[in-house]
Length: 223
Image (tube, helix red, strand yellow):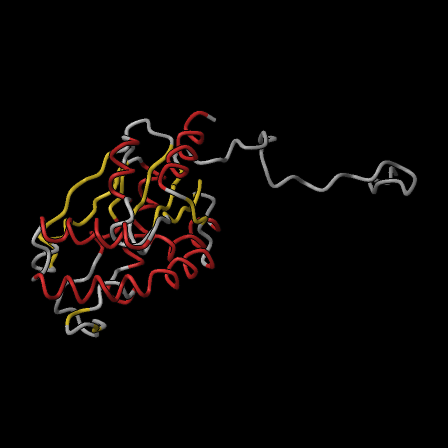
């Protein structure tokens, strides 16, 4: 009778592989990745994305409606600089959809009335990098990094008075809020800006000038 058990001095069987075939290093890298772009309101985020010409997820469109329960208050109005005024999970889901499928349905938010007015579909075509910009972008750094979809996380930093002035001109031109409210809010943001930038850096962003950020993102595209 032949003993079917393996001989003790024979070769040790290799454990079964979990994969059907070897996957080259980097093969599971997503087709698209996300650059998270934050910075104080008025720091030049929108101008930078226009120069780059890349698909953009406007994270400000994920603000909650004015009458959403529990909205934080400051300066006599809703504190739109508090992450509690913003739908983090919906924004993160949209970025996941963009990476996985190249498209996502995103809300359209009207800042003067502080309400969502509809939705639109973002199509990324063949772009390898999608920019997600807004003052709450740093809130998504850890999640995007852990899911392997983060290309870079950038915080725009420039002189505070310059940011204050450009923010005020923009908000007045767009009639975002009454002028006295814009002045009160702008002064508060001017004073808070250094602490905000430090917080975004702690959350994983690099603080750089708009010009350096543009060079870095263009280098990503060329890599």
